[in-house]
Length: 114
Length: 111
Image (cartoon, rainbow over all chains, first blue to last red; front, side, top):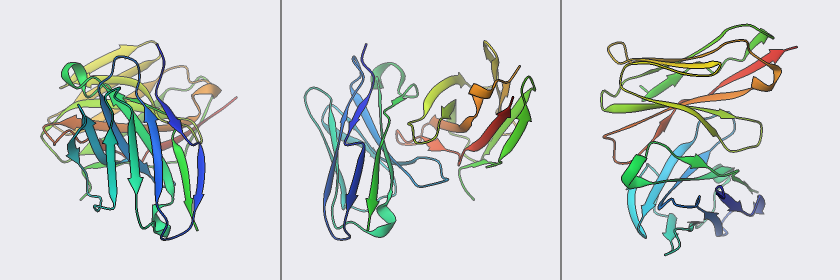
């Protein structure tokens, strides 16, 4: 059974640029959630995708968008990057139908915006 | 008021001590309560989850939920240096598929 993987590991971008982060869900999982974790804080829910549709969204502006593909992998896109977007971005997968509360995280992508 | 409150610590204990980590919450819709362990610069690792009130034990770890007080705890017995990490509580319920996390408690177990 393969775990959740994310790419890239680290990324440095300039304010105003756009970024795409990628996530492969754990085998057998059909739901992906994305989180932003600032230094010293807990993860903040960005949104969740189930069957290629957004299935819940946290308090993040529209410049944060996502996609889920038929193989359940997912992308997080952030447009017009701001300095405050610097954080660890975490992807978590789960089986929505069975136990959405039992989600497993990937190692994260550390984004630095300068 | 935040949905979930967690004392950030840091907490430092000698090896073998019993550790108590706690979170309080305000939303009665929370039904599932999770504890994650996060090592530095890594993703959170699911330790345990519980449903509703009561205790759940897994090896050296015991999770406790008191819904009447909106209070959850994680106890670590015979703590080891490898337990040194940040511990995050998380909650989920009828909240639009959204998990709510505490800020995390940083724990150091001294050999």
